[in-house]
Image (cartoon, rainbow, N blue to C red):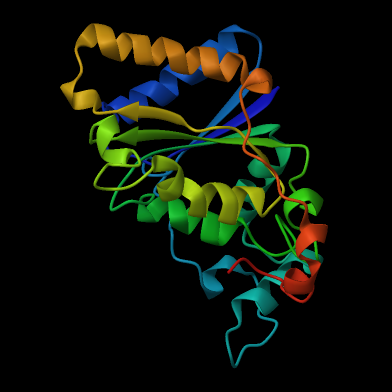
Length: 236
């Protein structure tokens, strides 16, 4: 299986980065292909605008979706961005690896999605959810959470973690057609002992090595919502 891990953490010695490296090492040792995009190390530019494209479909007024449609049919993305898209297209399983910041993903990772998940590349033309362009690929979030598990429960101050991650799991990954695996969650790593952190590393490697058997989120059937999404060409 070909894995693509997109890592969003500015500190190479962080728990998040260490978890990513450990998981990739386990995959490679087991004979899988494992590609890493380290967004901070690569200096990825998260701003999505005209810099995505070689030429403009409309040089006067900027319309992101218009420009993406044009670029997707004319090989019009910059070489840097096309390389990212090619790495995504080549994978069987995508892992987004990041810490929770302000109940969401770091801006650099959101920018990667804004630029790489373009119309004609991951969605568009009625191809969403069970008809999505990424259908047949797996996707999983590997999330480091600074707070304790209780804070992200039904009675916790932040609410259930599934609700916190729903905009990513449902609104991005499932929307594009990925079969979405239940997220791997690492709570309060700074408060854990070295032995506990090692157990988390081993549990993560085990999850990756058995991804096909891991529980998945329910994929809705787009036909059940046709009255709503028929003319929609982008996530809400």
